[in-house]
Amino acid sequence: MFDDRSPIYRQIADRIKADVLSGALTADEQVMSTNQYAAFYRINPATAAKAFQQLADEGVLYKKRGIGMFVSPDARDALRAERRKSFFTDVVDPMVAEARAVGIPLSDVIRRITELEGK
Image 1: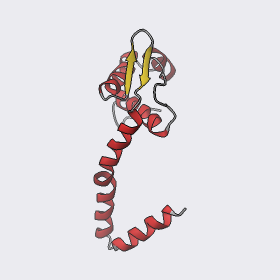
Image 2: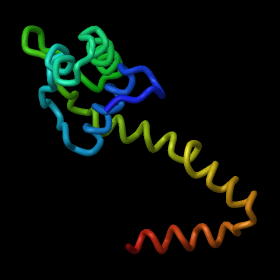
Image 3: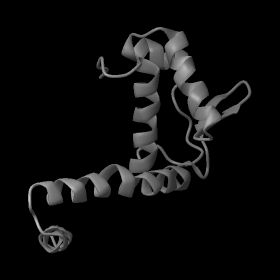
Image 4: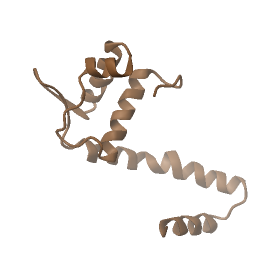
């Protein structure tokens, strides 16, 4: 599950965010405890705790004292808004620059996107 490209705690946080975005984790759903997560993935509990704390700081998770961590009610909407905000700068702008660099007219790019939308 983990690779060497980024710290494990960040990969854990990204995985949980992806699960929230996909609907695999829903609003107010309890997530595994840091100890369960650490045991399941055979990692240091402090690493899992760091990921969960980051998610709590970002408002993706919230803690119920003595019970555990849960998905925040608005987490999915907030994550979607965050992703939408970065979509054009991270995906579309580089795609347009690459199309221009290799001589593909933007009308061809738009046509292809429209074709894919119909599939």
